[in-house]
Length: 89
Image (cartoon, rainbow, N blue to C red; front, side, top):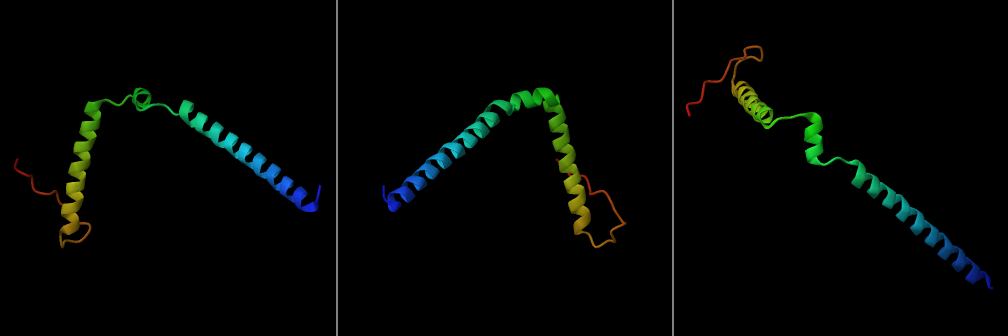
């Protein structure tokens, strides 16, 4: 076997082992992700969040955002905080 063939054989062996090991690592990572990550339904059961609570939080966040935007647009000093006028619906 010539020296060139020995170098090529070493390279092929190294490349084959690298592909096998990296595929194994990726495969184990994928399987862990697939089987250990809970679904959205399981997460909601664990967190015990009700849709009414989510709607309430969304309404509070909207009101808080409106409050902050109103005071940010004013020319008053930062310590002079006022509630925005009520919107008529």
